[in-house]
Image 1: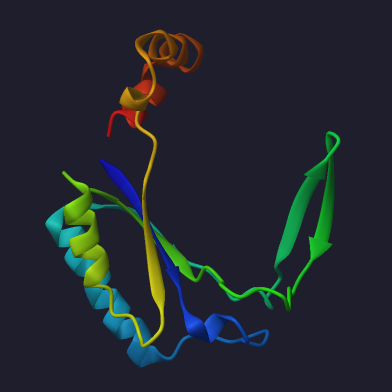
Image 2 (image 1 turned 120 degrees about the vertical axis):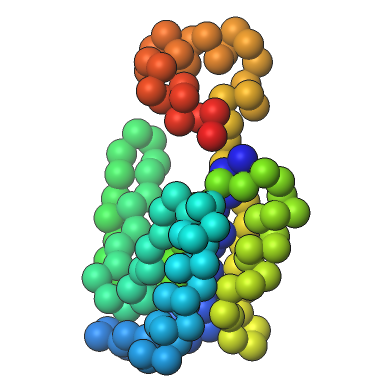
Length: 141
């Protein structure tokens, strides 16, 4: 099963343009990321700059898109980064999430990613037919 762990760091809510995490925090996170890699569960990860740094939102209405430049002062929770991991169970994903070196009042949301088996057999066949075996195989992770 694939899970996405989404980090909501408190320091991002009011961060000014050009803000970067301090080296000590990056070092702790790097150590955690190495553990994920050594365990063979890490598929992808990345950190995101705060919304005050070149952020924008694209909204949709009546088939048209609209771009609004940030920062967004009304934002209460800001995503700071993510990990995609492949583990055997929800419990294992939660175990990994609980080991993230987070600070007081920070939060990590853990969500399972869709798998081909979430769809009925007819839809699975259509996905394979339309998108090919590579996409279907990717969804079986």
